[in-house]
Length: 251
Image (tube, rainbow, N blue to C red):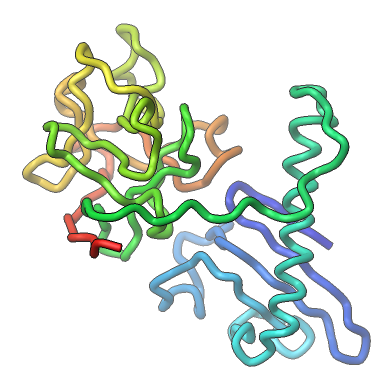
């Protein structure tokens, strides 16, 4: 049985006498305001995490290291399930030309770029990009290859993205661009757009929208991509992300 909600993916299997097992990646908080243990003490919530639901119904003990072979096998099954969801969204919905079948294996990870710096929150998560492509959603999530930034030009650029799309942009380029809740994306740099920077308070901001900073996104449309997307909000009335700059080791 598979579950897919925003960035969270879970896969459950019944192994008979060995119990019902569940593996999960990038868990969400669900209805609770805070993560319960073991997630609450974890620096990284990317996973995967493996649980024996028969012996541990509240998912308190991650067994991925202890049962690595089962963890790897169930993780591969979960990946196939997630690929089937993406295939269904694009092709069975007729939103894109149909292809013979979903890719059997995920694409190899993008090499982590050299240099730059990361922007990290107090919880250890990074400002990153959900997808290194035009209109890739900017998010606060697990630190990865999309977490490498540069501001030598006076505005933030992503070192892992193609130079033609590596700037942070607002969803709209018109007068409504500075509206509350407007999503921040990865897009092309423009001389007419002042771009984003981290100000003296540690907030992600743009001179184009005075008094506004990056806050958690609430737009339901971007939850298709990730539950940790970033949008515009008030620097005083909302709860903006606070970032600290950390040097990235040259690879």
